[in-house]
Image 1 (tube, rainbow, N blue to C red):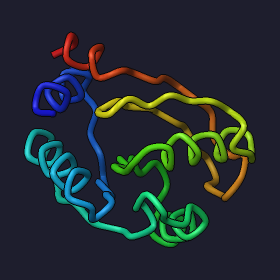
Image 2 (image 1 turned 60 degrees about the vertical axis):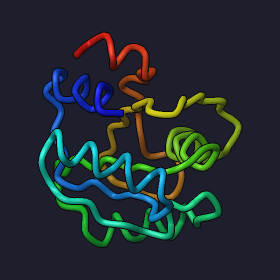
Image 3 (image 1 turned 120 degrees about the horizontal axis):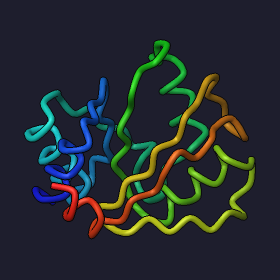
Image 4 (image 1 turned 45 degrees about the vertical axis):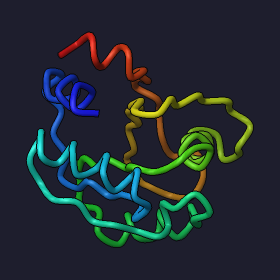
Length: 131
């Protein structure tokens, strides 16, 4: 994960918020990224494997300021499902996020449903090569 975080850093990415599932693997991943990029980590049960994506969207909307960059650290297939919902409003899009993969969505007005556009999706291998 350290090499992946260094790849994220090499891309020049920065996050205003790192929001993670409290489960151990996600927590450790988020903490490694925060150590490399700077910043702190907040935790949300809404990002757990059985979390509620509508609750997550409500939480993000409540705190989201314009142009805030948020990194979500969670579990599969939850994150792929969330990506699909934000792109299409359904879970029918098959996005494959490998462990340590990174997806960038652009959102103007966050809502539970189609509100995002996909900018890119990188695999862990690609991120390791970038560093």
